[in-house]
Length: 311
Image (cartoon, rainbow, N blue to C red; front, side, top):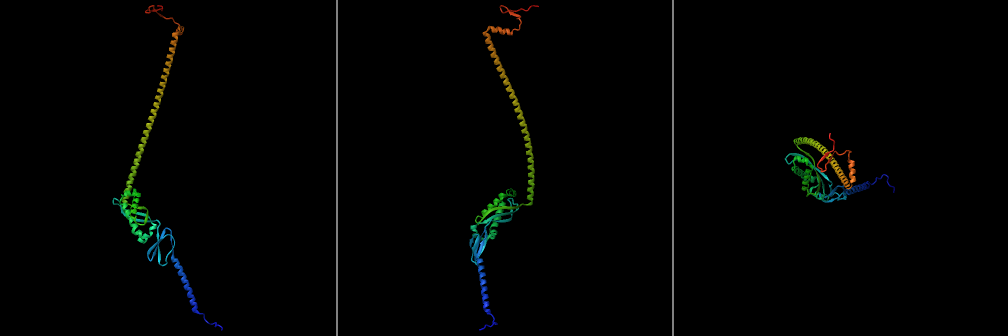
């Protein structure tokens, strides 16, 4: 039988075929979306908190993970060091008002992040409800222990006091406090002016003291110079006296030796004379001046005769 060329195609079959293709596409997209929903990642420096129908059930570390799509949700909690800054009004030990800006570096303990999330619902809630009030309280307490001048002079000591008080107040919470800082300290303008005046007076006094010390140093230098010159003159005089003494001693020693030598010579000559009459006569002859004696002794040796001719 010859088919009628004017016969229309079966539209219901075409529609059914298109519906089947659309459903397949929809199912494929739904499958992809479900697979995508089942996978998630947690970045380094964070931990993931799995919530199932709003209830925190598990903590996961950084990396790729899976969850139940449309049932589980993920909250990410940062465990890197964070910095909180608080600006507050406080008073010093003498009740002087000050404005301080303090900060604290802190970190959530990785192994206790889940407990922190369950207790406070996240970091922002923990900061606003616990950390920030504790920081303000510790700062006010520490500032009230010091006078205004001490706050300026002992800034590091004040910071250490703030940190000590805050660590003690936060020891029961699952965080680690790294370091506190006193970022800024604003004192009353009149007090700042009085400090500047006092510092100026202190600088002037220090300059005057420096001048006085310099004068004392110069005077002492002159005294030292005079003493050195005196000691040098004394040493020179002592040297001359010592030289004179040594010269005298040497001369005396020479005279003594000369005397001893002469005495020895005389002694030797006397000994020689006593042994030889001829030598005695020889010595007399050497010592005779060529003149005859003008006086002689008498026979009784009591009369002195003069043999000079009488004029």
